[in-house]
Length: 511
Image (cartoon, rainbow, N blue to C red; front, side, top):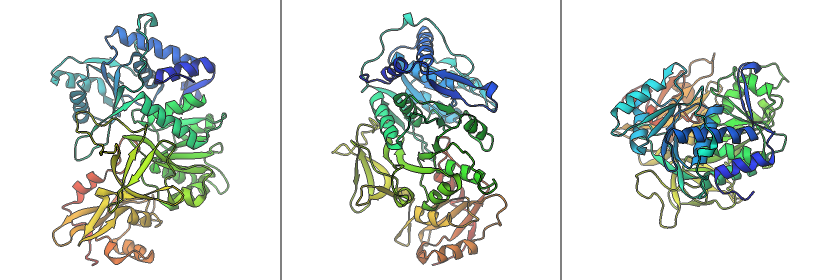
């Protein structure tokens, strides 16, 4: 395959296996599903590109799109890649504040929206935002129908895979999100490395249950195009409702993030002994959030499949990935090894991870150069490399709690909390404290039917795990559900810090 751009890859796959199924729009029943072959994907995307071109979209035009995970979203994104436009995907859960920021900062001339989706009128929001912008904004409905025209109107496809044509957005909480600049080359590299790491088979059937607007959307599309395998798209992932589509199409590879593993496992535990939740599933894969070692063993046993977890970020969609052939110890306690070409450097003293390689972004929109003099991008994450080259994530710089001058890893306490049967998920944060500098606060989400946790119960559990006394939480908060981001369902710790910073909660001085 000699092509270099994303569109080259689409055209190459369409020539190679035009009749093979590429995408399946999952639905509650088979009669509501839609299918596209790789040949149809290429033809339809080119016609959509022509329709967009007639609407004024040109090479270099900046187009923001806010769409769910569905066939039309993939078609629109590939159509923009065919034209050579600069596209900025936005998750559908953004509202006026965040979407307005994106439009102003990208200076986009076009906005594609799904009309009314899941009870929210995106088209009305688009027109509200357009009225407040300094320049004109063309609003395009792209959910039920897409622009369509004869491809003869199109100019030649782009040829420079190294040109910035993608602006993704980090999930900022207290501060505004940053626009992350990517190229076809960086996204293609990430997708190829992910495909290699997962050791996919010709008979595999993938799935996309995460927002396609996340950087993993085009990355996973590259994986499908390289291997010529299909994937089931899920517009809204919710269990048990989404299980029907997984079962109907015999999905073999699924995933998303740690929260997805937990959701699948919770459903599996409702079944009689010996019955598998998804009989065809052989591999659960994902990343984007810490994975407690115990969850690996529970998921493998409870779901009857392998689990590989990786380390990635919007700025670098593929840094490391677990290998299905790795040992259980490595898969449980590490985030895998980097692919060829990806370099990892650990800063002495702090343990901060920096990365360099062809899958790393080009920087941030209208922000200073984030790279160090050697071209490495500091990630803000902490970790170390094992003698075998596996990466172990130990937390984030901002997740280090400094209590009375002692550094405490939030992730260490979270992993111990996950071992308690009354904890479905946990987030540990540092809160301002006049006496200690910071105090340790555990925020937990409990499984249905569990007895309500108390601070005494939590402390007894952590002591039984031999946690050092100075690391014990002084505050406990119990929530029905932890706040999560709209992409890979990461817990929004900034929101928790804001909410509980001035709250006494269930507190005790354990020093």
